[in-house]
Image (cartoon, rainbow, N blue to C red; front, side):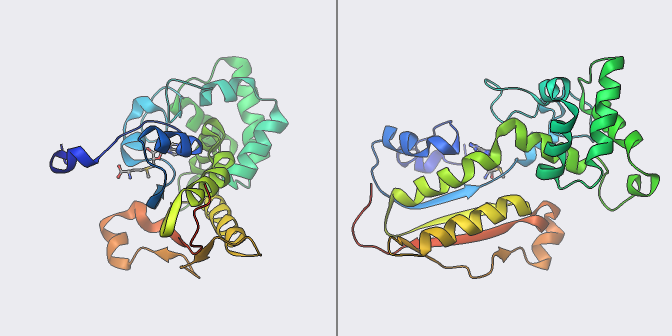
Length: 241
Ligand SMILES: C[S@@+](CC[C@H](N)C(=O)[O-])C[C@H]1O[C@@H](n2cnc3c(N)ncnc32)[C@H](O)[C@@H]1O
């Protein structure tokens, strides 16, 4: 409805970021002036319990951004060996109690399937020390983040997608990426830096430091507190694609 007035100029396509080139070509477009990656999970996904992203409300342990394909978080929690679970929770969640949590998940799943967000959150709560249970963020936050990233292979598609976006940029076109946690931001930073350096450099980085939300914006929208924006601009005259 919001796009009513510009309907003739808007094409909506559903797909993964890593299929950007195909999706853009499918719209009959070769080069673009700008690409915005608004990464991560969206507020409606978090707020709707049935999508299974949130430990605040009970729902099926799903977490797939595209519910038509792939394994759910419940599948991973059921199938991954303990060490792999611990690695996922440590690497993608940067969770210091990853080993305890993985052990607790394996013990709990022997008693019965962990199929809801509430059940997983309860397992995490039992696994971590009491002081951590009452910390600044909910003690299951990092475990949920890790499983979400693993389910959606979010980090794996990011670098290729950013490179593809730069490939289809017209001269002076820009790619903007908004990330929401340090693992994502690191990939954006390194990919942009790599594309801006060396003899084949095709862009320049416009944001030496990432742009972050002002105090005012953080107050109005607390979820903006972890957002970081980085931007590159196409430098070369010739188009690459
Ligand atoms: C921060 S939200 C975007 C919200 C949107 N800008 C809005 O204002 O409603 C990020 C969205 O990107 C989607 N997403 C994350 N990774 C993706 C990927 N690799 N391919 C396609 N979509 C992805 C998520 O499903 C989520 O809906």
